[in-house]
Amino acid sequence: MTMFGTNQLLVDKHVEFIQNLDKKQDGLEYWMTEHLRVSGIYWGLVALFLLDRPQALDHEQIIAYVRGCQNADGGFGGHTHHDSHLLYTMSSVQILSMLNALDQIDGKKVTKYVLSLQQTNKQTNGQTTVCGDVWGEHDTRFAFIAMAVLSFFNTQDQLDTNGIVEYIRGAMNYDGGFGSKPGGESHAAQVYTCVAALAVAGRLDVVDRDRLSGWLAERQLLCGGMNGRPQKLEDVCYAWWVGSALDILRRRHWISAEKLVEFVVSAQDEKGGIADRPGDVADVYHTCFGIAGLSLVRYPGLNEVDPVYCMPRSVVRRLGLHKWQDKVPESWSQ
Image (cartoon, rainbow, N blue to C red; front, side):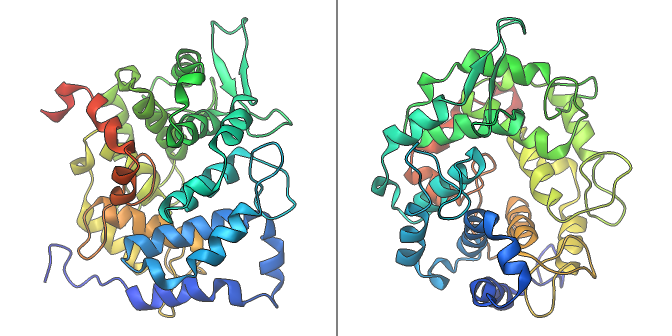
């Protein structure tokens, strides 16, 4: 028996659940989620890699499909013939990286696409924003994605990093958390994107470590699960959004790993997959981030996940992207 007691992850069932996702094409849900297809593949692959079952899906078929989602502008859509968006560009690059196929796309085209979405506003104290697509929506998610995607191609120095860091600093609140943009309410998922972006940029000094760590630790409820902001329900996905930020901050021990494992495992479907909370319908999104959250707390049998890139540490190390750890303030290791 491990430190997590009898809380067992249904590994074989989760693998089967992921394998069956593309076989349910006669259902309305399959077609209604067409725009999320690339992200769905990413979520499934991350779960399989962490479960140490990377060969459970056809890699060549996935590579061919993802390559078919790249558009003339260099970005990727959520499905073939869909408009480019940073979210799906990030997922596509992560997928190809995990499958050791990043060299099958033109990194210069991807870089050009990402840079085209960067905007500097001289009226906002030198802050630089990044849009999610050509229509102009911007928030801190896209600031992180821009930095992360370009780091895969070693072209992040072409971004206005200082301006983006100032934009992220402007989104920091009195409670230590970060919102979707300056003035936005602190939210755990946005905290992850901001802290991860600062880690890639080597600017974690911007963070109020103690205050933010306390705010994140308060996200864990009595049931062991976590919420994204005060007065909200617990949700399995925050095992990742909260846990990853605490891991980067070197404060993972501020939450109860045992209680978190108990909550995530209780949200499993006996037929496979993990739901947002016990009793709800399982989906690949919560399956991915539930397993990633368990990996963060070193659940036995799982491969380790990188808290910045949300990919296996082995992949991140192979790509040389683990060097963000060298820029963590020395005082944080004490």
